[in-house]
Image 1 (tube, one colour):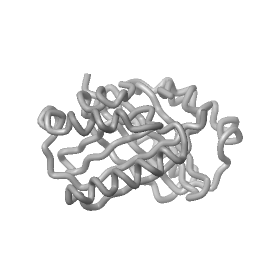
Image 2 (cartoon, chains in turn blue, red):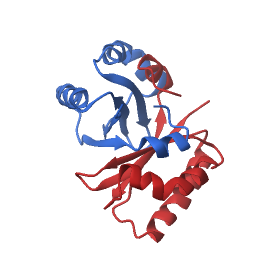
Image 3 (cartoon, rainbow over the protein chains, first blue to last red):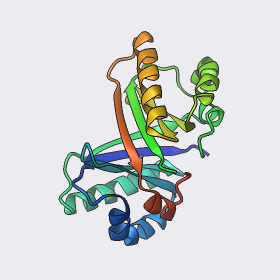
Image 4 (cartoon, helix red, strand yellow):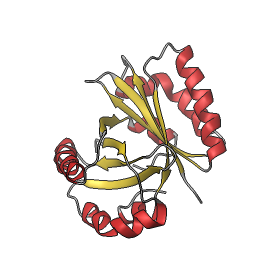
Length: 101
Length: 101
């Protein structure tokens, strides 16, 4: 399988950690059910006031569909400075460094 | 454990895929032995001419040490436009979306 990665981060003023987890548990369950999503890792940096996620998708279509949906959702939340970058995964090198694919 | 994430990407002109894997297998084995590194996922985007990696470290010190070492190595290779961002991982939300921690 060709794995398709998406890295997203944006300006964010909190909440962080457990408080964020309590607020967004429902959203996380919705994202978990996203078709074609292998996993999402949730990222946060309180010092730099940024948050985001690293996503692994099964294919290009699933990634494109999610990016459009999530960008619209973030914009609806008033999120600014959204940086999204799409990458393929180099599987042989990632296997050598124990990446979870 | 508090997981510490690092996302790095930079301008890159190839090689890609299997050719890159053949060229950098030794480097990947060296990175795999990095103290405090849980895993590295190798990223590449031939269309946008960018490559990089997503890393998970055991702690802040391991991440800072690696970032300094890897940035110097990339600069020695002549790599330009290095973007590095450090994040904490929100473990409860990541668990809901099957992230490999």
